[in-house]
Amino acid sequence: MAVPKRKMSRSNTRARRSQWKAVAPKLVKTVENGRVTYSLAHQAKVVTDSAGTELFLEYKGRKVADV
Amino acid sequence: MPTPTKGPRLGGGPAHERLMLANLAASLFEHKRITTTVTKAKRLRPYAERLITFAKKGDLASRRRVLAVISNKGVVHELFTDIAPAVANRNGGYTRITKIGNRKGDNAPMAVIELVLEAVSAKQAVVGEAEQAAGNAAARDAAAAAPVASAESADSPESAESAESAESAPSAASADEVAAEDTTVSASEGDAAETVVVEEGSVPEADEKK
Image (cartoon, rainbow over all chains, first blue to last red; front, side, top):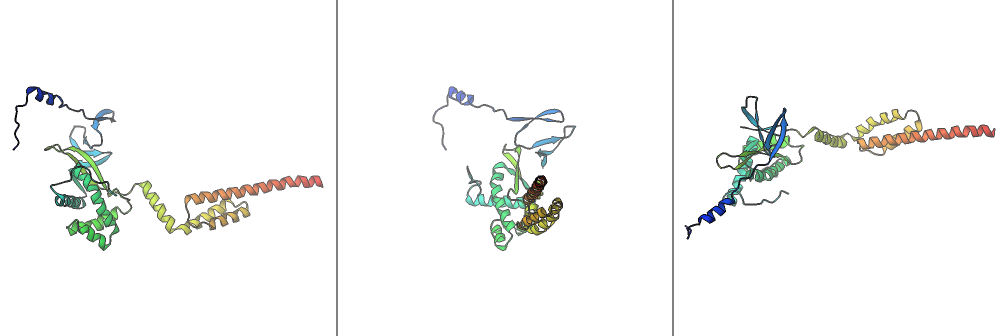
């Protein structure tokens, strides 16, 4: 098994980790029944009833799958 | 021709990839809708649609070529007897892929791939019916259009004759040709009106000569 020959310095470790960033997802803004909702583009959305219970996944007005 | 696959292949080897695609296609034809990863769904789409194209052809050679991929005879029978007639009017695009987010265990992007079994949209259905009707009932449509044209040009018998002669020439009836017949009828009516005007003009001249 390959093993590192030298200890990695704290500087190098921190330089590597400084490049590790989170990317904000691209959201689509839509208005449904007077409420503004944000959702991911090109992906099925979860449909909920008035109580907030998750019913099924929907995409372009078509039921895709159960949750 | 499907787009060549990009990126790494599925599975641990060529045989593994073939088996995975065949099993995915068999599951898709059996259940009509399966949930899998986006990568596998994208690889499955051209593979499964090619098998459906064989099924639409429907002869024994096609059935054997499908059986070379899918070993389950029950699934192949269902493909040829149920799925192929359901997509008979559809020119490709037999499957639909919808992304449904990432899997919980390994965060893999998942998708639902399903057969598009509902009828072709109303507009496309009308176009298909029109194409069939144009082939089948061309003579009947021409016969139906003839009395309409004659009724429109009932005032002048000469124009009606010209319209009928114009109708007898083209055999394939379509909306465009009916419109063309209308234009010929109106043009002939216009000629008749012009002749009337000339006659009216000639009458005063005759009076003047007298």
